[in-house]
Length: 83
Image 1 (tube, rainbow, N blue to C red):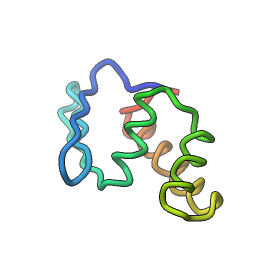
Image 2 (image 1 turned 45 degrees about the vertical axis):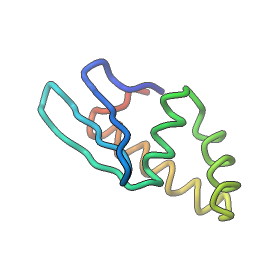
Image 3 (image 1 turned 90 degrees about the vertical axis):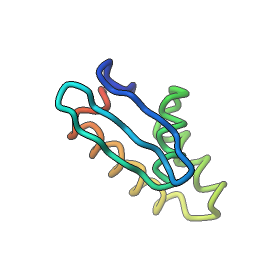
């Protein structure tokens, strides 16, 4: 998975700002969303992201997997990420 060419990503103190330049849409994430985005930029798979975040936050992999998968699907639906 990778960000589409028309997408710019900027990390901020509160999370991440994603700007989709063609439709001029702006998306803002919290710190957890920023963690997911950072790992996607590193070309990590959803499974690797889940394992890393579960370890980082001390949460169950099932709960993290649901959140990560929903986040990724939402970004695909918003045409920010390409499969």
